[in-house]
Image 1: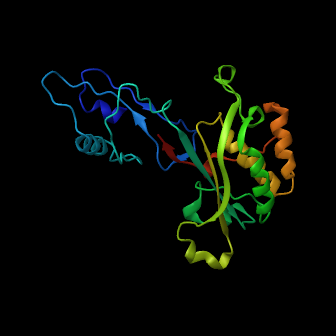
Image 2: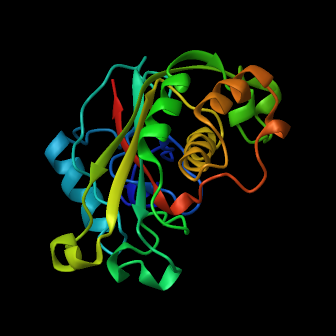
Length: 241
């Protein structure tokens, strides 16, 4: 938003972002919309000019504008989205925090205690698919009283992945896995709670059927204490329109 003000609009610009993320959560791709009112007699920016101008002002920041599109007045970056996809990166095989590769710190979660039971986690993830009341899987915030807890999970996959420069430390037998979730929208900290519950299944602290029971309880206070996944491994992957 600050970079956009450097475009010298007649009316102050306000960004409307598609997806807000907690501190420590990453975004591989996000989207936003804004209205730019230029001074009388000045032509509207075309897409290429807008991308170049914004990126010039964003040069010191870890963010880049990749695409720009002219949209109708009815478009809203948040409410027009058809789906959002998040991935959560897990690292298995670390006995201590210092065993996490330097380039992966703050970019994944390495639950201590060895390898997780991935087949059990995959079985448990199937209970999350479909339309459910996810009250147990949300953290409470100021929006809770005004938000329906019902969400539809379109995808819940757990697949092997790779790490940055992982070919150079294959001898350490570290395993990277990605948990991918897709839905039109998610509740506050829902993805981190779902990941935490699935990891608890992988550690043997919960059974796959416990996920179904947590859904049926419909009470955020029933979520296991200290089970929420940390923000570091979570990435907003894409927003679809």
